[in-house]
Length: 218
Image (cartoon, rainbow, N blue to C red; front, side, top):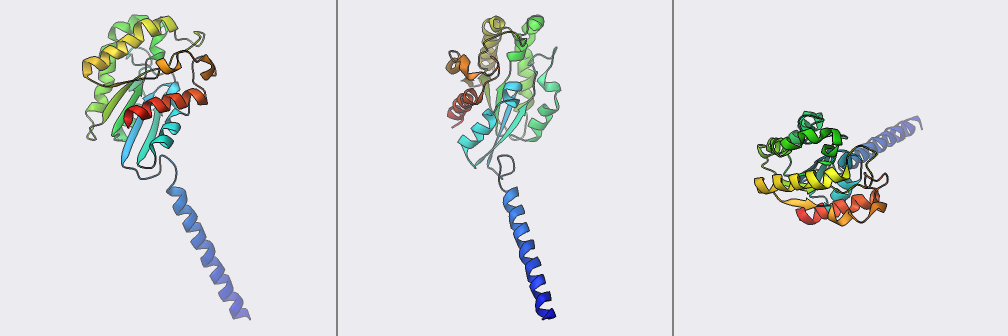
């Protein structure tokens, strides 16, 4: 009787161990950043990237053959004279990710009135940022995104500066480098209800951004 109990205990321990290993296996095989994927997509940006659901929505749309990394940094700018994205740890992380596709959505924080003095360097600064990805051995395809609109100025960026200066400079940068653009500004410009604070998209706005980027990539 004692022997049978001992063998029963050993058998139970084996079953528990096997179940634990199985659970660990599946836990490490799920999730957008843990799955082994063929195509790596780096989402580069500011809080509109880091603080919204668009990268997760994009990964769900692209499917399991893709890995999507969120490398957004709140407050980041293109300008090298203010809060440059290039000085952030996430810039290094994005490059170490060795992306096959880079989606850059920056410029909103460059529209601060106090940063107008740096507008003249915007294109050169943006080219330097883009160049940091162009030299990667993964030879990524780079998409430049026209950021979404915003509907109040109390958080800092000025909508007039954004529309009259920053958006045209983003387009000019992409044109001079021969890079494709993705316009998420136009599909959101008449939808203030898709922004929870007038600047940052809510879940509906994030889905629209993800959809526009998805359509461009595929």
